[in-house]
Length: 495
Image 1 (cartoon, rainbow, N blue to C red):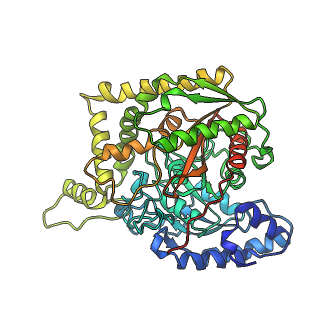
Image 2 (cartoon, rainbow, N blue to C red):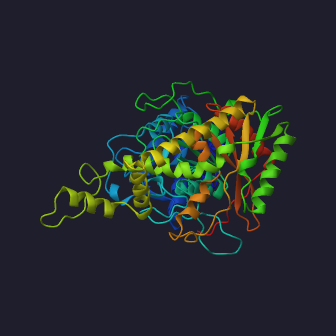
Image 3 (cartoon, one colour):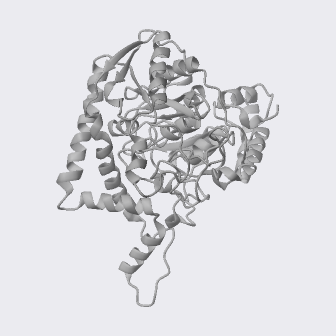
């Protein structure tokens, strides 16, 4: 079999079980693809020795007949996950040289399931960004191009390296994290599938924190079946994470029947934004028709507090970030600035943080510190928390009325060029999260499924939002949508 790196998780798993291919062969194919794709800047710490060692162990395990679904499958790990003995920088200068002495729960669970780590993936610094342009490693680049245009496009953010690597077949799948859309937006931009599970479904232990009440890990894969396989391996209760849910993890793959007859799919009127491109509007309408043709009932619904979601998110997330990032002080780990004669501890903090944090992280830390300060705490932070409660209640009311899932666009546009949305107006960049942040504020599961191409040949995704803890049902609806959309486009290889 040639081009083994182009397989998905399910196909590769089945080939491994039949003895048609070994994990070492799969891994070598991916390692070669990674070495040939430096132009994408997706993998920032390559770990070929670890990968081949794990692949050999996986082959032994498969031979012995004791192999879970992920065993022997080569994947990439976002740089936000701590990986023992391997640089884990969260794409920030301030964590330069940090090699954890421990493994994050999610990456450990994947390793225990026999998955093969190929290396660490590029991302926005501390997961703050929607275009992967805030990384200390430089921009991750999308494998997609607009027609015959050579302009480099963003793979989305913050999990841009993960999206780029999966779309370009550098790995079979990758881990991502999602605080306001950081799995679903890059998945939509690159024509892959990404699911953010319910808050508490995956452990956050060992994942560098951005906004603790919003962050959630999830898989980024080539299709919905692969997302179901990988999500099952990533989930589970973890006593080390106080927000981790003590719930059994179902066999998500077994729930993919494609049968959605009688399901009620909500279409929220508030997601019809002014200035939404006609292509997105059309795709959304087509998605609803596809689900209707598969036997679902389409219902118009209202989520009245949607318009307050973005402002509430951009108060809560920076507030939590400013608290979480206070630990990076140049004392305990990571980088410390060079100090001048006579500098004290205050100067050390100031210089270390000024050098170590990039502009976007500095901006959000300052916003967060401001909204938490004594004079503004009630006016901003407490008010945003109240709005969050109202947004959550909107969803609870809709689900209580019998809606099974909600269909929305995943992004307000297709991928844009790197450098096209510069620092001049950060709000323009923040608007990329307009369809995704409500899901994090309400702690719900959301999945992005590729559903079509725009007129320039770039992928567009649709988002499905599910009931809490109902990832299996949500994935099944996504599976029906994926089957109907029949999206098979791949980027042409230019790198």
